[in-house]
Length: 332
Image 1 (cartoon, rainbow, N blue to C red):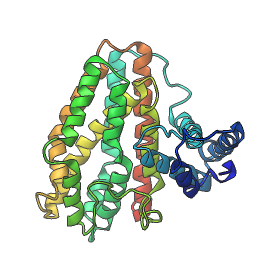
Image 2: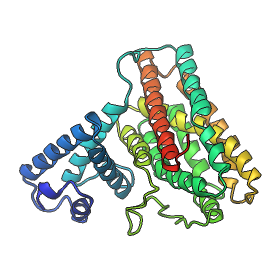
Image 3: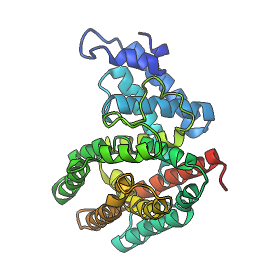
């Protein structure tokens, strides 16, 4: 297959259906794929051209999902993934005045301020959609919440591979909470059923199966959150990704507190709300565990600055995500 066709999902599907270690691989198709991906990356993540941005995020999303949120093995698919992921991360991390080093107290204060800002600025959206006369807002949120968090457990496992000691133990404890007892997939399915939607406990809803590709309610900003997180956990140094996962745990605790209260007012079934009620306590505990790890002496001043950069970037992308949902529902 020529590299000129490598930058569309159908061609990447065909490439990845072959065995990458069989046959010979001339350098020209690989070089051409990297060149095309680089051109797309500039248009998408530097010039922010809407069409290019959507194309790049959809390509990354397909590659992440189809490779179990790991780096693709096929050389052309891997080149496309690496070039686009690098550009996404480079365009998202804070620039300018971001400190190169930071001490523990300043890092903690900055992390807590970012979570507090989300609670004040972004999370009132959750009350607004629960007060709408129909459940259209909840449906849109549910689809994009799951699309944005797809691969969470796989990402945690990848991050655990890049850590040691107490940090790895804490991450694996989080993984155990995700898969033990009543599975999160089953709880999500019950929430979706209350909204009159179907949810595949194995594949979720954010897939590239027929009928899912053109859902207008699945926003590109949801794919951005997934793609950004998946790029960072593939990096050899875990610090930026540690900041992202702290942000996810700390922010989602506050989301769940709001949603449980609002859904009770809508008289949602207790089992349908369980996915949120269990996280009210669980994610508060997880956030404390993450913060304790991040404040440990295992991290240098440079590491702490990178942790803060990861949190800052993720919360900025998450803010854009909330704004996109508001725009889709025409909320102020």
